[in-house]
Every structure is written in C-alpha cells, then in structure tokens.
Image (cartoon, rainbow, N blue to C red; front, side):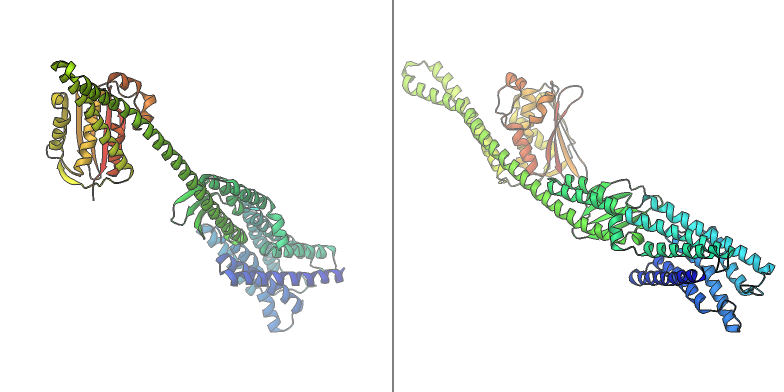
Length: 566
C-alpha cells in the first residue's frame, strides 16, 4: 500500500509541477491579472508538493523546521490565491475581500507562532489541534466559494470556456477532499491515504486540463458552436443582401464566445446589425477589431481568459462576414443598377409614347386648321376665319407649352439646369408669379407670407415650381387658395393649399409621375400631367423636395422644402 501511495505521490508531484509551468507560461504570454493569480496559485502548490518530498517528515535542525513552516504557510496561501484567481474576473465587495484577506493573514501568522509542530507519531497538543481545525475550515470554505463561483459562472458561456471553468471547479473540490482525508488519515499505509492521493491526482489532472486543454478536447467541446458556424458560413454564400448576411451570422458569432449581445460595425463605425440586448448589468462590454470592421459585444468577464481561442475564431468570422457583406453589397448594387436601367428604359419608352400622343392632337388640329385656311379661305366668312385663327393660336400655345415642358424635363433629367440662388423677397416674388399665371383670379388667392421674409432661391426654379402649384390648385381644387411661407435655420418652406376634394388616396403614389392624371382631374380640366413632375424635379435640382399632404378638413396641400444655405 505504501509503495502505491508513494508512486501516486510522484505522479501528483509531476502533475502539479506541469500545472505551475502552464500557468506561469500563460501569464508570460498575456500578462493578465487573472493569469498572474493562476501562476501564483499553482507555483505555490508546486513548491509545497516538491518541498514535501525533499524535507524530512520530522525535521531535526533549525533550518528544516523553518522551511517546514514556510511550506505550511504556502499551503495556507494556496486556497486564498485560488480564491483570488476566481474572483479576479468579478471582484467581491470590499467587506468580503477584507474579511477573507484578514482571515488568511491570521492563519499565516499563526503558522509561524505555533509553539511546536508534532511529528507523524507524536500526540497533537491542543494548540496544534485548534490550528488544524481552523486550517481545514479556512481551506474548505475558500475552496467551496471557488468551486461555486466558477461552476455557476460557466452556465452562460460557450462550450470550451464552460467546461474549462467547471473542470477548475471540480479540481478545487477534489483537492479539498484530498486534504481532509489526509488530515483524518495521516498514515501513508492506510487506504484513506491512497484515496487522498487519488483525489489529489484527479484534482491535478483537472487543473492542468482546465488551464490548458489539449486541442482534441477543445475541438470536441466546440462541436455545437462549430456546427452552427458552418451552417452560418454556408448561409453566407446564399445571402443576397447585407441584412441577410447579418441575420444569418450574428447568432452563431454570439454563440462562439457566449456573448449576451453583439453589434457588428463596418470600417466607418456604422452599425450593420445587432443581436441581443445591450442592457449590460454586471457584464463586460468589449470591442474587437478585425479587417473590414469591428464587433462590440457583451460578454462575461471570464470570456477573454477562458475563451481566447474562441476570440480568434471570432476574428475569422468577422473577416468572412465582411467579405460576404461586400459580395451582398455588390449584388445589391448590381440589382439596383439593373432595376434603374429597366426603369429608365421604361420611362423613356413611356415618355416618347406619351409625348407623341400628347403632341398628336394639337399637331393634327393645327394641320387641319392651316389646310382649311389655305384651301377654303375664300369661301369662309370673316367671322369664321377669326374663329379658326383663335383656335389655331390656342393650339399653337398649347404645343409651345408642351414643348417647353418636355424641354424642361429633358434638361432636368440631364442635370443641365444650373441652380443659382439669389436673395428674393418672397412675398413680392409670389405676387409677381400670381399676376403672371392667373391675373383674372388673383382675388381668389390669399398670401400668408411675411413681407420681410427673404430667402436665397434660384428665381427661375422658384417661378416654375410656384406657378405650377398655383395653376394646379386653381384648376383642380377649390378656392380660396392659400400660399404661405416660413423659414427656419435649416429649411425654407412654401405651401400652396386649396379647399377642394384633395387627391384620391389610391392616386397619391403616382401623383408626381409624368403624364399621370387621376380620373377626377381628367373630367375636371385639361392638362398634360407634367406640371407636378416638373415642379418636383426643380425642387430636387435645388437640393430640396416637393411634398403632398391632405389638408384639413378638405383640400390638397403641396409643400416646397428647400435647404437654407449655411
């Protein structure tokens, strides 16, 4: 029995030394606070185990007794150092930290103040028995705290960090059981001593694997996240829009590191997508840079230490996501360009057809009137000739207006309209427009414009827009027509509102399309259906917009919105 126990002790010595080397190397590589506490913890335990094989069981000389006291003091410090490692991710409250620290200091001081430490076959004095009891309580309480902290904290983590934390929790429990068995059965020939050493072996293996699990174990533990990641990568290949990419990949990315929330940003810092809630509470908000963008995530404070490899996988996923986003953007841009070309071709075809249709009637009328006047002029009475000439003048005016409108649209489509803002007194300019477009109906138009209001607007564009709106309001609405204008620090707004029936809701989407007219407007008055299209195009050329909204209680309100120059 003694030989087996001794063999197991040598195995434990090697394992705890390996744990110390692993922890120390991790600290050298990353220089993190948690890694430092881990290095101190397992280095102290390795020294205790190694010194236990070198020092005699019953030291006889002074320096051996001193080294024995230091060995016991390091053994007292081990659970405290392990506790500090466990709470380095989420520090405890100050009173708890002071209590645990004070208790540990008292135990270390008591180690050096003990009158004597009895040998293996000597009877324990009362002072030593009290010390051993306090030692066991101190070690057990701290180990239970460590095991509970790591075990419960691992619940929300990804596969690899969760198993590493739970292995360390198991190791803390196993080494505590080994210590208590060693206190109860100090005889190395007993079965309890062998069981104690076996628990110590299990603890050492769990410590080593928890600190640095082999690659094959990591791969096995990571299988669920790997499967989701592979599905996400496969899904990226079929994603056709940036939203598809984000929706398919954010969940698996969050699962890789056990993130509670995750936010993907592009190289300019714009948010591309978000998964989960950023109500962080006690969690840790971290930002991870990667080529083509960055990730902001809410993780537990344990993730950087226990999930370092997972963070590297995350960087790879960000690169793949950035490539997929670029592909989706190119696909989306190509599709938008194709739709725009198809739309432009359709508009051009419709434009030519409708323009020809609109011009056909006045051209045919003019042609017929001219033929009549040329062939039958001598047969017609003077009154008939004057009537024909008036109709001819009306149709040529209609043709001239239509041609001018078509030229306006072609110049606007080609961005050939130069916008040159000038300082205008708005009320005076509106009065001039009303007098020019509707001189006989000026009394039906109310101006609600401050005489002192001035704005920097292109006069030609302003005239085109307002004249179209006023003519439309008089032609299709009901009087009175109200023209109002205001200006803020950022926008100039002019509204033309009538008291008619307004625009039918089903026609509103097509209101500003070329050559489109509702059935009500066709029955009420003539027109080409180009006025509002031209007015909005001029507003866009002026970097503004023309907006329709229903007036209250009835009527139509068209609002011109132009930016105010800085």
